[in-house]
Amino acid sequence: MISRLGISGRGGSGRLWRAFSTVGSTSTGHSASVCVVGAGPAGFYTAESLLRMASGRFNLKLSIVERLAVPFGLVRFGVAPDHPEVKHVENIFQGVLENRSVDFFGNVTVGRDVTVPELMQMYDAVVLACGAESNRDLGLPSEHLQNIFSARDFVGWYNAHPDFTNLPVDLSETTDAVVIGNGNVALDVARILMRNYEELARTDISNHALSTLKRSMIKRVHVVGRRGLAQAAWTAKEVREILHSVPSVAPLVADENDLKVSSVDEQELQSNRSRRRCVHIMKDAYSKGRASEELAGTKKELVFHFRRAPVEFLPDDHGKVVRADFLRTVLEGDAGRQRVVGLDDGNRLKLPAQLVVKSVGYKSVPLAGVPFDPKGSTVPNDRGKVSGGKCFSCVKL
Image (cartoon, rainbow, N blue to C red; front, side):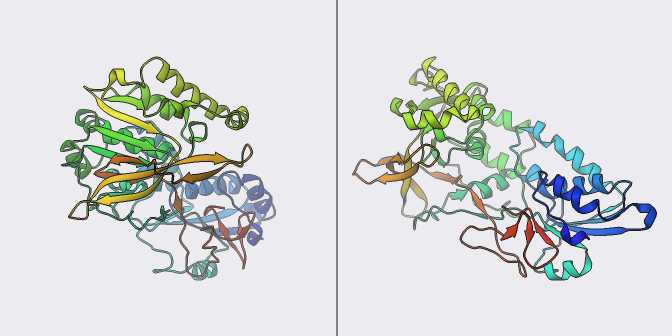
């Protein structure tokens, strides 16, 4: 009966209920065992839903398996240290761990210590909630120079993720940093780079990152996106915070034309209230001088660039990045289907950059014994159910 279960994150509760309603109640002695691979938010929300649905209806034995020694995944290692309120969800997750039906197994690497087929022999169902454990690349030969990092690695570094504690971040001679991407993670990285030492010391940022940031010489951070302001994926809360609530930052817009939206952009914004708000916040800040040259000079400069695509990174004699070059881009196509077209017209944006952080997305990696689509970095599935039996995926459906 369990093999009919289909899970697609927290939103799959309806299918969960339909699957488990056929199992029966505890009075008839029915029981089920489920293994959740991954102790991040997806894994815990899945476990929470399973426990709630099993309560009073059937006996559930739940195991949560995690590669790291500690649970909570992105909540512990992905949330910016100056956003402690976001981590309060750990209280909910801790309640799951304290449930007598739940066992947590840390330091277990699925695919090395145990395989998914082996887990499927031991449990009635296996849920893959191990997330995207790799980085998307830009596809540029020069993107692996010294002091160029993915946002995933850089965020793990300042959050004390054990995989990244020794990341060789050098800020001692860095005056200009470039963050590539227009999402919340890009703003997190920019904000951490620009906060004063005293502000960061009051957070739970890792000691090694705090020590490195204390020696930082950063004067300017450029946030560069391939698309326009109307397509920026950050939230209103994040953009408002970095424009108005970080005392050490003077936000600037490199080109006033970057604030313009096309008629096609306007069509897209009509159906996206969140992005309309973000456009309004940015334009309002610029018109009031908060995002203009007036506040630069005594503060660290945060410079926004839109419609620019990275094309090359240049090193010094020791292989460390010193400059980032960008092509101008245009958007072509109908609303909701605009694509980025690079224009190599000789008018490149050349930014000094002794540090580059690429915030261009993550991708999943294959697990032994589980089907995998390398093109889309996804686990092929039918509404969450992986082909071939009783395995279910929360891995980038």
